[in-house]
Length: 335
Ligand code: NAD
Ligand code: ZN
Ligand code: ZN
Image (tube, rainbow, N blue to C red; front, top):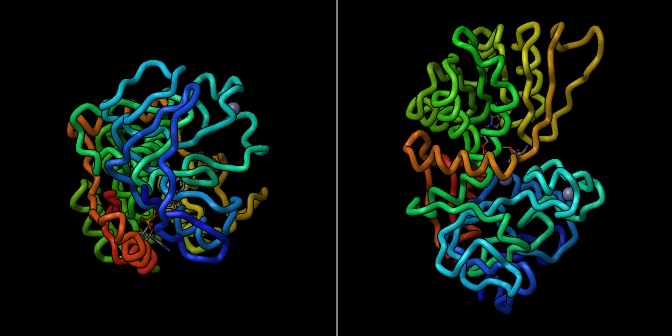
């Protein structure tokens, strides 16, 4: 088997030969059919927050290949997408399918599959339990894989501020990349609110227009004028510049949702840069039930991922292009 592995901190990932894992206990072996490339992969390559070595890939679709003796509910051949924010597996949150907010998250040495644990940029992926698998039916695997994060994370972020997303509300989407372009579609499908997209790249603004944003504006001084008074701001970049823009734009009693891990800082202070009544949240990924919802939305045609396909052997090219801002939508690696 082949796997795209981070072998040591500070070195780019390498496609290497590995032994095919054998599922034991409740484990399930998945033959990978598609694996999405996320901007978080660049963060973990650069900042090395987890011990190496491990295989990258936290957006994974595949087919069940083999099941461990104690695995239940899946059978070889089943097409699935992998729920990625693996937790401790034993706490109340994990038991409720909310592994993203596992009570032991601070003690874990990983954030999820492909993030400190072997992931799916490989021929096969070993999954600890069938409860991390969501059936996808006949959905194209290249569509299904990005749903695991680029679909699930914005869905979860939007669920948390649905009460604010009323008919007369304005929601700003900052950053129209892998997550942002799905966020726009989810907002259009799930809310009556007016969606304004912001990005620094013209191709990203074109993507926003294609997927239903009511307006798209370049991230320049002029963006302030369009965003002022936003009821909800979803920041998919999280840089110093976007957090400042988000804080300036937020209406009193508004929701600022920080999804991007761009390393920017925002001061919370009274009085300070945030408006009265402002709520700031830091959603992380999503729940298992929400992934099932996102798969259902994709199967119904309500959301479509803009995909650029690469063979697994061209992973380095895909990574370079993501880094250079030369991808639109999501890059998906096909083993
Ligand atoms: P991406 O590279 O596909 O998209 C990011 C977009 O932001 C790009 O279109 C880029 O042009 C735009 N952008 C960058 N700087 C900007 C600025 N100053 N103003 C406006 N737009 C700007 O990345 P992605 O895969 O969609 O991930 C987005 C971010 O979300 C990353 O930081 C990633 O690590 C993070 N992330 C967080 C979670 C979570 O659970 N909170 C989950 C997945 C990803
Ligand atoms: Zn991700
Ligand atoms: Zn847990």
